[in-house]
Each structure stands twice: as C-alpha cells, then as structure tokens.
Length: 70
Ligand SMILES: [Cu+2]
Image: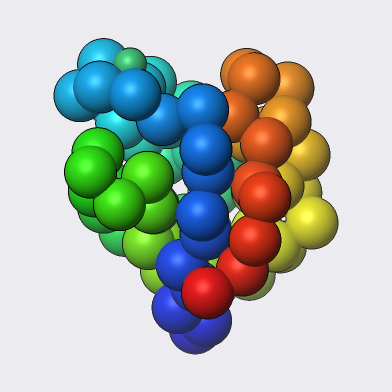
C-alpha cells in the first residue's frame, strides 16, 4: 500500500473533491481518497492493481491534472 498526496491546482470547491473521489475511488485498488479544498490537495492510498500512473491518468482525463507530488 502506498500513500500519496498530490497538489492539484484545478481544485476549487467541494464538488471538485467529490468528483475526484467518485472517479478515482472507482479504480480497483484505490482504498482511500481524501481532499482538502483550501490546500488544493488530495491524499490517496493505492494498492495493486491500481498504480500511481493510472490514478494520474484518470485525474488528467477528468481535468484535474497533478501539478506536484507532495
Ligand atoms: Cu469544484
């Protein structure tokens, strides 16, 4: 299990967090998604078969590209 935090500048409100939770949380292996609107950050726990590359690809697809890993 890997815990990662991403800085995602496009996060502007709670709906953004909700969308991210719904889309990324649907991936098999993503155990936990938590967001912080003010900090524009999302913390995830990723397990196989999900990969960081896959999570980042989904985030980019839904218009929340990762700007930085924290
Ligand atoms: Cu929003």
